[in-house]
Length: 287
Image 1: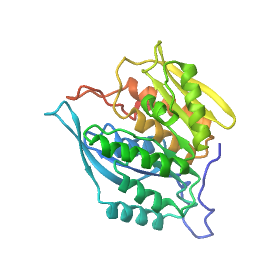
Image 2: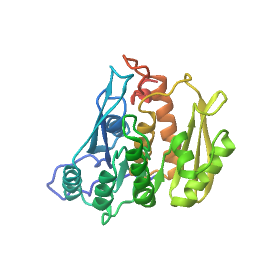
Image 3: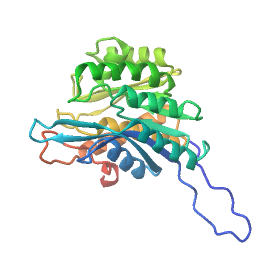
Image 4: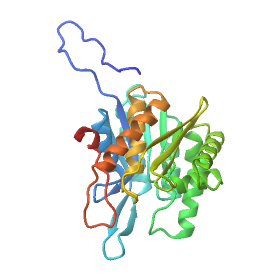
């Protein structure tokens, strides 16, 4: 693993600490703080990178409607303005790792894809959020298709959950072997490294994920912490992968560390009024 440092200061200049690696998330806001851009920024900070965000949408859970999503897209021009300002401020050498989270609409995907088209990016981590409760089914399908055709081909690392793994691979996943096969298919389609999340969706005592890249595959497992999904786990996993890649880790090293980070965060989850708990990004620190 490489460590990035600032240039050696010239005589007479102040000594400065090593400059942190930089990580940008292009994602939606989730008001309760458990997921989305809020989770990404907390993950970046915990793992020692300088976090930056461009917001794509505003999501707030509706306590009067079974805590479903209330979804408001950010205007495409505003998204473009945010990305333009960020990429103008930092050179490709400074900011070479970007995480893509919830897009929410084909227009947003068009804007993001166009904004990144000419930007050299060493690591483009895609958390392929394919469904947002509250969207019209037809609109959600259009968004899914746009993500698959415009963002997936640009990605260098993809972190689909169980449902997304089935959708992207076109395969049913009910076992670790099927998860491995589906992850391999997504890698074949995209060329990206893949960390496919089985999590609590697969039977057995362990939460199992599968990593696949051109060098092979590896099963990552840890004892399950409860039997219910935790808000922010997927966002934090992809953000942790991005942070570790930005610091110089290899894809498999980033996957292993991200798995540890999320497992610890689930163990230190936060409860509130929602019917689901939220991962705490400080879980490793609290051990």
